[in-house]
Image (cartoon, rainbow over all chains, first blue to last red; front, side):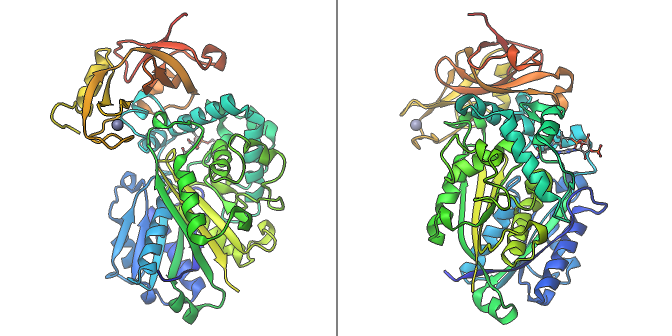
Length: 385
Length: 127
Ligand SMILES: CC(C)(COP(=O)(O)OP(=O)(O)OC[C@H]1O[C@@H](n2cnc3c(N)ncnc32)[C@H](O)[C@@H]1OP(=O)(O)O)[C@@H](O)C(=O)NCCC(=O)NCCS
Ligand SMILES: [Zn+2]
């Protein structure tokens, strides 16, 4: 296997955008190409991730995006693994580079949902569950994670206040992220008083419906050395599935694919938990951040809820989690999210994250979940000297 | 999925409308699920049969939905729940008229009933 390097990233702002998914993708990709300083014609293939394109009456996004980028004959590949689509595209691009098939690939995740009203969007999002056996009985996406939350609360004594602390931290981090969906400080009280979406989850426990696109360019080490000075290596990757239906899991407060993907990523990076300076995890709901930390083995199962409350996961804490603001406050444009996490890693490892900079960070992990854990991807990055 | 004697999802839904819950059972290891399989997700065996599942069980976890997908708009608030049936098979379903956690303690006994409403419809049973 060849060494693979993250060359650079780009991203639109997350939130409500006035452009379609294809346009957002092109903007993010152009930013990445320009930041890295390669030519668009250096890109040999384009890996696209998108989930709700059909709601915009547009499928087959790959060639459309490639065309706008002036590389109409580059092969493209569009992937859908629900909210994990972005990191799936990235990992499959990684495989292609590592295998020696291509030298330089553009990965771009994009999403546009703000043209859908709340009910329509809630309905579309529920298609990410095992629809015939979950959503058909009335589950919404927040409802599924709410059931995970209630199970966690029942089994381990987690409280709504502890979950609220996750939202407070992530909102506070997003204030320093110019591309975040929300720039609004909130308190535990605000979270507890916000309207119930699916109990025990309230509005501020949920990520928003966001539009946005993020891009990443990855290449072989040989290619990278010709174009950039500071190399960020993709050291570890892990990918796993788990039963899509929540009720088919042994522990409904756990995402097995997270555990499996993290184990793989640690194994093939030859790093341990102690090496991770910060991580971007899939906090589509506050409970999701808690179980991500637990399932990847950063604390004992059932003890994740107190980390935010005790400040451990703050930017200057012992284990910073979601310095970008996370899905909760940076936003969650579904197809873009997994690539957006990598954008944060890039800025942090180059020391360009401004007021949300994790001091001295050289090694970072991203964790991206599809639906309630049917898919999980974990990636580990490290800056070379 | 329509394989020899195994019911399609459409047929499973028809059973639900008639108030029956059907499941897939591995003849080799005994594993049971409501989700279709042609190889057992637990042991990999291809010896699969269809069985009728018990209608009663207890609530393992749930949520009370205040923001619902289209088909359930008129039911808000209701509980979407995970139920462990008396034989240990796990299913999901919903229970109408639940608005606060006190209405539905975890472990609550429930029974699946025939309904003109969509999905697997449970009601609470007194113990
Ligand atoms: C919670 C939810 C139902 C809110 O629906 P919505 O259509 O976005 O809400 P509205 O448009 O009515 O928003 C009302 C206000 O709340 C704000 N808001 C919406 N969602 C918010 C969120 N998650 N957190 C904080 N504020 C939020 C809006 O900005 C708006 O504020 P304003 O009045 O100041 O402009 C929706 O965001 C949701 O379902 N989120 C989860 C998405 C999901 O499941 N993703 C997949 C996860 S893997
Ligand atoms: Zn079996």
